[in-house]
Amino acid sequence: MNKVYFVRHAKPDFSVKDDLIRPLTEEGIKDSKKVTEFLMDKNITKIYSSPYKRAIDTIKDFSEKLKLDINVIDDFRERKIDSVWIDDFVSFSKNQWNDFNYKLDNGESLGETQIRNIKALINILKENQEGNIIVGSHGTALSTVINYFKKDFGYYEFERIRDIMPLIVCFTFEGQDIIGIEEFTL
Image (cartoon, rainbow, N blue to C red):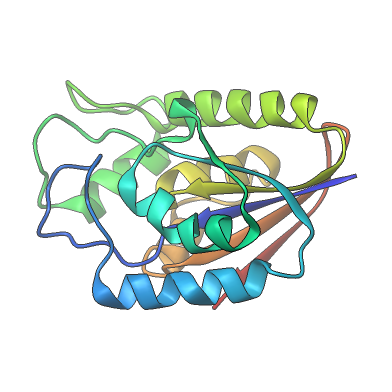
């Protein structure tokens, strides 16, 4: 049996528009210590993350305390909205949750995001038959993973968690079969 703790990043600094290098705010840095406290007794054996700075920085304190490397997997990255910043995120999100194939010209659909995140998750489950795992993640990417296992997780559930940073969702697996999903707010 494995537990995979998806850790949605702490509060990012939205004044930095570049997704890849967007840092955490001071509050986000403080909250990353709460993530460490929460995870300390979870018998974590492996850590993976999105390549985005905010996801890595949210779990970095924990990885340093346990002296575990953070294995970056590009497929755990956040959904790409477009090559430009959009102002009306709410309408865009509704469109995406209503149609998993909806995307902007240079963006990515929720369906595409879900496929690559689930593929990466299945790969780490195959590589790690035992032990508990952390995945540093993002709100939309994590939401598509939840939706894969709980089809009733849609736009309203996404909106409910949209401003919860950090957020930890624990997926319990027997092999590759899901046994349970549990959500933790810190």
